[in-house]
Amino acid sequence: MSVDNKQHIGYGTYILVWLALLAFTSITVTIAGVSLGRYTLFIALSIAAIKSALVINIFMHIRFDEPIFKTFLAISGATLLIIFLLTFFDYIYR
Amino acid sequence: MANDVAVKSFYQESTNKYSGILSWLLTKDHKRIGLMYMIAILAFFVVGVIIGLLMRLELIAPGRTIMDAQTYNTLFTLHGVIMIFLFIIPGLPAIFGNFFLPIQIGARDVAFPRLNLLSWYIYIIGAILVLVSLFLPGGPIDTGWTFYIPYSVRSTTNVSMALFAAFVLGFSSILTGLNFITTVHRLRAPGMGFFKMPLFVWATYATAWIQILATPVIALTILLVILERTFGVGIFDPALGGDPILFQHMFWIYSHPAVYIMILPAMGVVSEIIPTFSRRTIFGYKAIAMSSLAIAFVGYLVWAHHMFSSGMSDTARWIFSLLTFIVALPSGVKIFNWVATMYKGSIDPQTPFLWVMNFIFLFSIGGLTGLVLGSLATDIHLTDTYFVVAHFHYVMFGGTGTIFFAALHYWFPKMFGKMYNKKFANIAVVAYFIGFNMLYFPKFIMGYMGMPRRYYDYLPQFTIYQEISTIGSWILSGTIFFIIGYLIHALKYGKKATSNPWGGVTLEWHIPSPPPLENFETIPIVTHEPYDFSQLKEMKDE
Image (cartoon, rainbow over all chains, first blue to last red; front, side, top):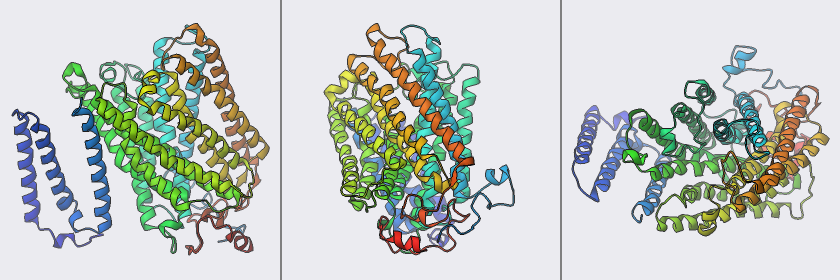
């Protein structure tokens, strides 16, 4: 376990990440009202992925943790990705 | 280690300063928590059985027999919700996982004992919410346990409350999974590498991963349905601009892996019982361990085989059909390895072993009929018929339910320090087999003939099959009550059990029956393979 996370992350970083999350949320809300056709979903999911990455790495400290936690997270992420891909075999070809 | 010396058991010593009921309700001991789960889960199981009996009684003749159609709709929904969410999902991991996983890896408790107790309370709160939903204005839920859209958005019954109960129950499952994964990674005894862990631990570990990764999906789905019902947000209901097939995707992304939450620990129990009663090390240990992980993984990829007739794309249908056939492979690995373990073994057909034989027969029928449903062409004919009902009862009840009784008979002497009447127990195995097949096999025939599931009434040509099925339900439920009866009798009047009545070699058989508070006087150093029966002599000498 990483005990000394504080030495890696300062308050400034937390605030910056928080502001970034707010900005991405604003973008998500804004583009929800814009017709981007087939790219709408792709953009929304990309923004969500970036936000997740920020939260997981910085707020949840995974970036500074042991490899086993990163492995666990990678397994979870891969599972989610596969579920998304398989679901799209329905939506794209319907 | 050692055996029949006078050691205080966990019944006599508590983790807290209280005595009586409070010492249980505030306990942090994994064994007591396992037993508390057992009491609650068995109580709900009995309720589920009684509801099933009433449904079968209604179906003994065409037309109205003992209830109206709406009552029947609520009863089959309740039967499903209780059996799935309150009995079969938590059953094996919460009871036997809690009790035996720490002991089998040589630990004194789970990694987070307080969280473990919290999981039990969350389970009880979820169960109470289910009960409350029955009595609030609006009446009991009538959607079926699958909560399919759009009916579950439009039904005026207490769908939101029942859904919220399932949401709460999911958290209990997630926290239990989290506890087990951490326990396996952090608390194994010295010398116990991953490939020296008993296969029940492997199975429970794989299950825990599914609990953690899949359960949040149903939680999210449930919240979305509640949002839709409460605020009219159009997510799933086509009348509001939603997509009902999206609901089915999200529901089965959890609920299919949940099938493996139910069956994997059962497979783990089988892998414990067969070597013990064959007096032979398990054949293909690593293959069985890896097949648990493979099932857990591939189990995520096959959910849409529940949706072949839903209107999803043809491409998705053949891909999911193909993936469904692949999941049969790791299950086959297990079956063949179990049979190979018995080959040339010195088989001692005691009660737990007979239960496992019951399982292999019933689960094989369930598994093979699953392939019939996994094939696109035959599935179209059989979708939403009694064939599906028969299939999942053979898998869930014939598989997990049967192994629940196997585990109960295998570990009963260890858990309670008493032995049950073996003659009664063997009679129960046979009666269970007869009742089970009479109850469920006619459903395969009716389903093939076109009898739809969940129907209150039926055409006269189905009468004889419905009658056989109902008589089977009497035999099966009578047997279940008989089992509960002789086990309760054994608690009080049973002979004292020795520490190792079956000649097992995994760590739980090295400690007294019932175990002491923290399981081991000193943490054992593991030197043997998990099913190395050469240690039996050493154990006797101890």
